[in-house]
Length: 149
Image (cartoon, rainbow, N blue to C red; front, side):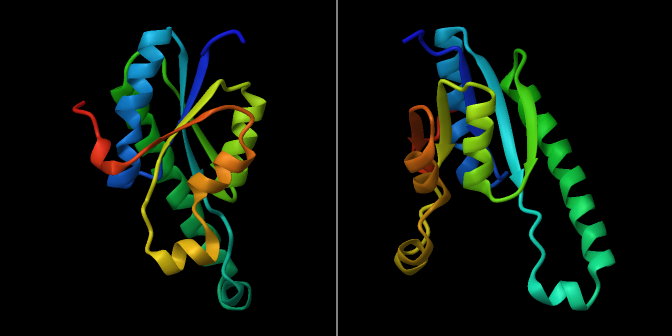
């Protein structure tokens, strides 16, 4: 075990996900680790779009991705140091695990959303799916554990 050298922190820009950012910054500072901040842009088209306006939907996805890149760059700057911003396209839990594997991440830091019981029971959470598939430990932060920035 070589210690914590690279940390991946995820965000969807919600208040809940922002709770993970200061935790990741603090852990990275304590270990002198490189910090990667990632957002997964879901690029799946609903079935009705294929028939009624694929071009307009593609333009909307492109605008959303550009906005995500800007927000992520801001988040990376706020984390300080040399945090690297990464935007991936796809299914969040799949892309988070892929990034962790590709970048040889030693720790993933992410927040929970605390969905309602029915939603959680039917589809699980992104956090739980990452925990089950991650190649490294996952630090899960609840929103009420938000640290002062």
